[in-house]
Every structure is written in structure tokens, then in C-alpha cells.
Image (cartoon, rainbow, N blue to C red; front, side, top):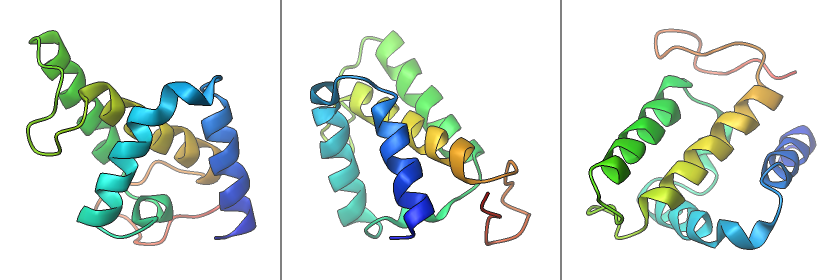
Length: 108
């Protein structure tokens, strides 16, 4: 992993405080690793993707749903993953990326 990316990831996870509260997020990250590719999300993507996912999981919680039917993991775990991604992107990439923009994000 790129050193700058690794530092940003550590910083992003430290911003949550007590890491024991991230066990549900760890399960979701593992689910994503199997569904997509390991560390695929850390390469960057349109910020609208994790933001929309976080909103979708928040809305599911507001409807009274605790577990995501596709993954079998908690919606809160998905939200923590999405917010972790956004924190990492904010600390690593200079601009908001839209799907129509460059495929490779510009690192700080």
C-alpha cells in the first residue's frame, strides 16, 4: 500500500476514537473485499458513491431495518465503512471526483 494512503487510512480510522466500535465495519469491509477486490475502494472513486450508500443505509435504519438484506451485516457497519471511505478521500484526494472525470484521482 502507498505510504501516504496508509497514513491517511490510519488517520481516518483514528478519527473514530475507540476502534472496538468498528468491528461491524470490519465485517462489512471484509464482505466488500470478497464482493469486489481487496483495497479496491482505497484507490478512490466518485465521492457520490459512498455518500449515496451511507444515505441509503441511514434511510434503512430510519425505516426500522437493522440488517442489510444483501450482505447480512448491520446498516450501521455499512455507514461506518462509507464514512471511513469519505474521510480517507478527504485526506488523500484534492478534488471531488465525479464518475465522468479522470479515472485516477490526484493525491495530495
